[in-house]
Image (cartoon, rainbow, N blue to C red; front, side):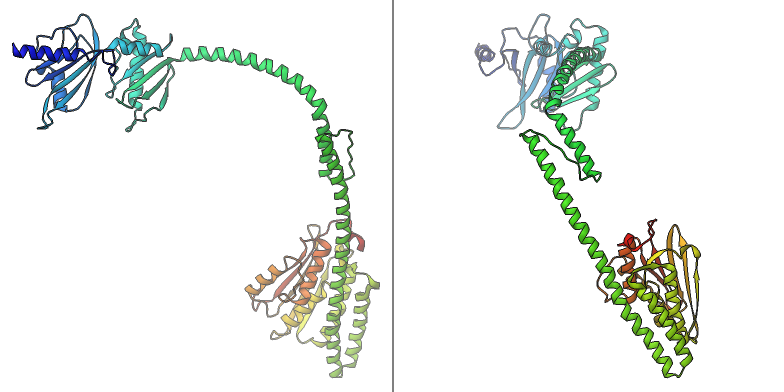
Length: 515
């Protein structure tokens, strides 16, 4: 009697659980089952006659020592019910004093409740179902509610797709989309129980929706295009046309026509643009004209300064040679040298011209070589070879003589024995080239590299490269542009080759074309 009264009191207390505000009213029953045989329930149904301690589900909960979910099953595990489908969760409870498991608590939820939730989330053309942490479908109606075998197969395939795509660490609350040729599968992992909610949408449903959206979009686009064309026509008259006129004018300016002009009576922002454009073109014309005049003056002055610098240098070295000849009582040779010097200065003066023909420049060099060869005949012989095609080429005067002077004084004179100087003037790729080659002592590779680097640009610094070579290089670059100039090839003990490149633009016939 006492035992029965105790059990009855426990059951009565359990009956209050479903009505408590803190509990879900969809729970069918909660059961407390002890290892000693005691059992309590929250529902009015009678216990089953079978001992729950001998069932598989009881042993699974007891042995694992952690909560266990059980997929949909017919009828309750604990009490007597009519045709009824539910899912269950079992939790072991532990004696706080000993730490031993003393029994289990089992809660049962009608699976139709989960199906109702899933059905509300789905649509007429798809399905929604729940999967537990072991990837089992937990709402049984997803497979039993008036579905054809084809639909049930589709749901099972979707479950397998989700199972194969799962990662080691679930991403809670993040939706994942899986695709194949027949369906679209969307799933999301729920945080509290590691369950997945899965939606299956047939591709035909998506296509049907896309077709509707496509038709609607085409209609909206057609309406928008019609309205836009009408608005654009109005805008073009008030804004686009004036801007197009201004853009055309700017294109002409970009092409080099600074005389273009635009006019408008508008006082708005476009009118300001027109006025700014007019002001800009006027300023550009003024600045370009000023810069052009200054550059012309600068180039002329630079070229004349270089010519003035080089002439005293030539005169000093030539007179030095004549003085040595007179000291050696070589009167005849001195007279010949003075005759050559006379020819030399005739061409040097050139009636004040800075630009002469290549023919005159060759005569000038030949006069200089005659002078030096009289004195240093035992040190070198020379050969001058000029192609007739380049004789009429216009060139700054005194570009070959300084290089020849360097070759004699710094290449052939210090060398042992008699050397050779070869001068070749020829045409190559439409340009005029002067090649001056000696068999003298040569220059080290380091010095050649340094000199060529210094000769790449025009500079007033004469401290590095030889005085004459730098002047020649600067004159060529000033007259013919940066592509022209002097380059040197040499090896120690093997002589030196100096090349002068006159980059011809074509049609240059007088001094004003250069300056």
